Image 1 (tube, rainbow, N blue to C red):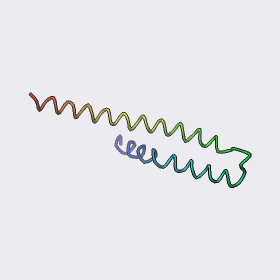
Image 2 (cartoon, rainbow, N blue to C red):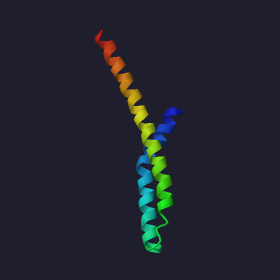
Image 3 (cartoon, helix red, strand yellow):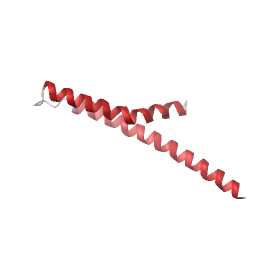
Image 4 (tube, one colour):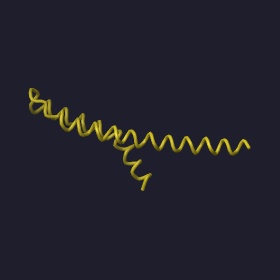
Length: 75
């Protein structure tokens, strides 16, 4: 379960900005004077930061396990 959520978070780190770019293009094509894309950008940005923290947490855990294994091998 933890790895599945982290895999989704890694995927969203790449998909989120792509979705936002698509929304910016749609906004520019439809009504460039009314910037409605700010609200989806706020939501996507919040979720993107949460996903980044989830991935960083996994990297810290994996790094800690690797350091533990390296320390135990030296003994």
